[in-house]
Image (cartoon, rainbow, N blue to C red; front, side, top):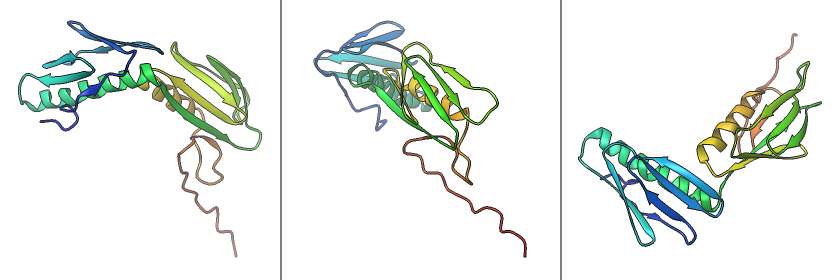
Length: 178
């Protein structure tokens, strides 16, 4: 039995889960998410818990079992608490402005870099920090990764965009000549 898949998903107050033929709708105080139903899995809601079961013990079924439970749990957390990722911008002359759905950054290029977030993801700026927040864990992570990829941190001076909890291993510069 899958260690993740066999754990029940706790449903907090204010969250409703509707199981359909091909999708599961999770609605809560922050919004609504739709989770696709994985093949050979079945979701049942009883009281304040949702359990995921599988049809057989095939390797693919076992993988889908854990995936279905994880997606359902992420949706429940998303509609109650939401998800957030923080990014930091380091570098001389680097600037950040904007907020909401669109931000503008000066990252050492000859032109300003603009980034527009997809629907359902909110961008907030504070000095040299970007906070990406939303109810969909996948979208929040994807947007944070796309913003980071605009100017990845380099190992010599540490300039670039990095996650707030990311550690950049620094390298020594040129040794110099005798």
